[in-house]
Image (cartoon, rainbow, N blue to C red):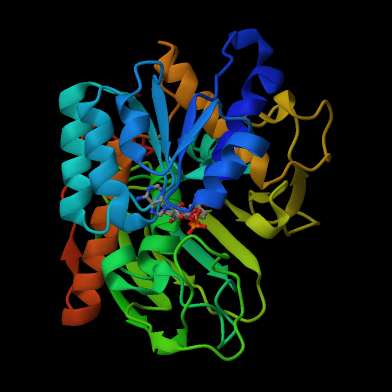
Length: 389
Ligand SMILES: NC(=O)c1ccc[n+]([C@@H]2O[C@H](COP(=O)([O-])OP(=O)(O)OC[C@H]3O[C@@H](n4cnc5c(N)ncnc54)[C@H](O)[C@@H]3O)[C@@H](O)[C@H]2O)c1
């Protein structure tokens, strides 16, 4: 993620020249010395360090990206806020609701601008789906289906990276993928008011991988085995709140990191009384739309992402030219830096992170107790809400 944030910062002045924002890559930190060298020599940072505190103490640094493993998010996020640095932090923001609340409180107190790694929000087809729902084109929203099915850990000998360790990651697929999906549901449809969930762990041990080496896609033959301490699969039944654009709607959110089939399948389906939309990240540049009933040609129309959707026109001049994952991060960097520069607040923020963390914690509690969990409304989020009129 550190590399990807960097590529995104570098792209901003090229993709959005009209903003006049040109980030300078001042200093990068990683505890792995070879990654510090890479940051300096390949990514183009002026300096490198193995101590993130040097980054936060540097008076030349105005904004920071926090892309370390989850267990460091609270420590670095709070320290960044206290140092007065605006920060773009990866999800999940903190390992628990309590850690996320600490980061939110510190950022709010310091008055720094924040942005969260909820990249899927920025897909032009998703932005278009959100606009259709807000305009009432689907009628009253009745039900939502989100499923984030990634196969990154579907090999039984897939590496035991920090993601599988409760101390280092917090929860498993709930923190990693479910948090993306609950954020996307809230961004597109509105705040979730209550949920019930279940979880399961498919592979209980895996070969160990040292921090700062390889990736969570690595497969290791032989090697010492260690315990998987968090869940591989999660599912929730959700009910949207009365202030939600989808007031009265219900839905399901599923997430798996061990699925065999989809590689990065991420489906969002929103159904209303007058129509529905379907999107899948593996076909990121398409939106399936059905509006109205009857007619001689029932079924979905496949709409190509095009310059009328979201930020598409900044990347491609005409419909049907595919954008990719990196482009979503460039849009995220632009929204963050634009807000820092005093422009409109199009960025996701720490309040969104708190709201997503609340869904994760509620799902963990519900999976253990079997009980429905109510979610407290969170102020300041960018969730889709019923607007006046
Ligand atoms: N938004 C997304 O779609 C998305 C995708 C992947 C990862 N992520 C998130 O990004 C974060 C990083 O994930 P990743 O896959 O890049 O992990 P990674 O393990 O590949 O990289 C983490 C890096 O942090 C370094 N590190 C460890 N301790 C450090 C410290 N004290 N100071 C500085 N650096 C330190 C490691 O050496 C490593 O280079 C996680 O929170 C993850 O959930 C988000």
